[in-house]
Image 1 (cartoon, rainbow, N blue to C red):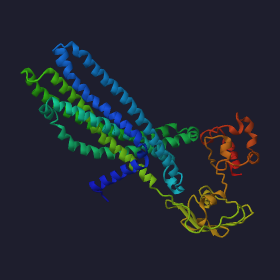
Image 2 (image 1 turned 60 degrees about the horizontal axis):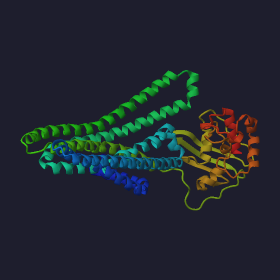
Image 3 (image 1 turned 180 degrees about the vertical axis):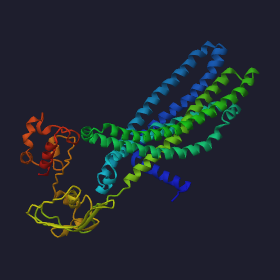
Image 4 (image 1 turned 90 degrees about the vertical axis):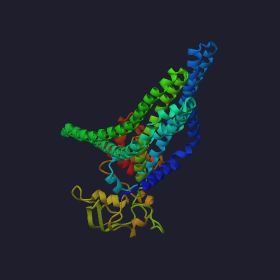
Amino acid sequence: MNTTPTQNRAHDRALARWFWQTHVRRWLPLIGVAILCMALDGSMAGALSALLKPMFDEVLVAGRADMVKWVALGFGATFVIRAATAFLYRSIMAYVAEKVGAGLQRQLTQHLMTLDQSFHHNHPPGHLIDRVRGDTAELNAVFEKIIPGVGRDTVSILALLSVALWTDWLWTLVALVGVPLLVLPAAILQKLVRRMGVRARDASAAASTRLDEIFHGVQTIQRTGIESHEGERLSHVLARFVKSRVRVAAGQAAMGSMSDLVAALGFALVLTFAGSQIVAGEKTVGEFMTFFAAIALLFEPLRRMGSLSGAWQNVLASLERIHRLLAEKPRIAQPEGPLAPLPAPGAETIRFDDVTFAYDGDPVLRGLSFTAEAGRTTALVGPSGAGKSTVFTLLTRLADPQGGRVLIGGADIARMDLRGLRDLFSVVAQDSALFDETLRDNVLMGAPDVPEARLRQAVAAAHVDEFLPSLTEGLDTRVGPRGSALSGGQRQRVAIARAL
């Protein structure tokens, strides 16, 4: 369904309001200090142009030596104030941008960890990494461009316009005659940049996904000799990314270029109009230089303000993607109402009753029924892809079946406390998930209060102690990302120790 411009504006306001209330408002005192510094910095542009009149008329033309020190002092004070205020607001904005970005990344990551397997099945890690890192990085433009544009450039424009109008209001009108011509092209470019910004973020996510696959599968790539093939696939993805990013940059640059064209038109008209007045003695050189400097300096903040629209559209595109991700609700949730009692570990029978399960309509289990008696070992045997791992996915409620029930001790696990249910199970998967922590932390994951003696017992039972002496710091050795410092067999043993 197509949306109207009014609906789009309301949606954009809602996104901006959400971002402000949840992540920016808490930094308002710091932002207020930064905006004050921006305003001081911006006002100095007007002071610089105003100082040109006494410099030309009183010092250079009239030759008044007593004015030299005052003009020099004015210029010096102006530049000192600009330097100090620019340093302060840039430092503050950088700090706020990093804190807001880190907070958003933390919120997104925590939310993604609550979503069930069906979501992660459809969203590869590289895609999610780019959403967490890339989309939040795009929001830096709020603090690097948009707020400075409002706080500094608005004051600069007002100060410079005041100087220009004070010098000659008619010259000012002539210089700005082309500004209304910017309105329609800017509105069209704004929509195009927004659309291209969304495509650029999607292309970036696709590139991150491809890189994630390459680096995680580098051993397979090297063994099978498909480096060139994978490089070619990456090249196609990067080509789409580059194309979309260049289009965004071109759209943003076009907004600034239109401002430059308007500036050129204004300068030509003013020079033609004002030149005759100076020759006739109606205006002084100092007045013209003050006006010329004010208008010349005016178009730079105007150009930056013109580019803010494109930057804001990129921010809105990223905000929309972030908000859509946070709006995803986990299908697996804590049951409401009275909960079924949790059984003692290993004391109750597990039963699958006519269970059906599918990923995106692709059936994995069809009418599965079996019973695993308490106190006995039950083995599931079948070819790859038969759904053996899915059984444990359903047992721990990482996903729910589309049909049938899973029962423990006769109680449906869908009615049990979710955290308590998962604590009943220890699963050692074929691909053991280790984290870039110490060996001790990987074994104690989720159970930091286990006594040292119990930890040593589990390590010995899983035969981790057989390779422990070869590690430089024993249990306190970091195992690297995904356990990369250990062999496949060693990772399996650590996973078994964790389960024990």
